[in-house]
Length: 137
Image (tube, rainbow, N blue to C red; front, side):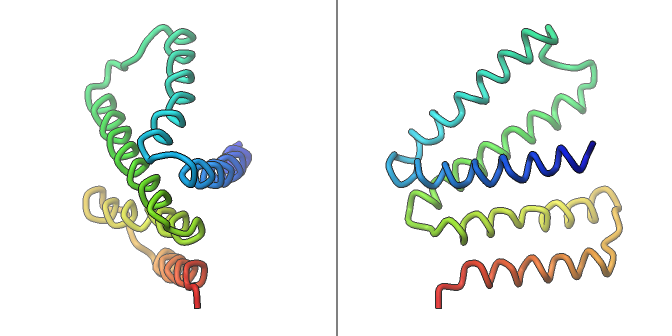
């Protein structure tokens, strides 16, 4: 199932970035953020209603989920601002899609995950993709 879920995510996020750029060309960054976040609010209300709870018994789980949401919001706002300030869709989306580099480094430093040669090659290819997709010349 993980592959199906991943493919649905891929398609959804591709459409998300496309419509985000279209909205950013017509609205101020904060208008795009508020309007696009309405769907998150609606989904949150549905999940609270369905499961009748908001938080878990796990304090650490709750805090890390809140931090993930906080950093997600910050990243989302600045992605909108990047698109709104004239950044090309391909450059902004590709650059912001390199966040696994940060995750990999943090996992290596704090969790002890191993950075293999294969992962290093992936990082190199990701950086090459950024260059090739964002180079205008």
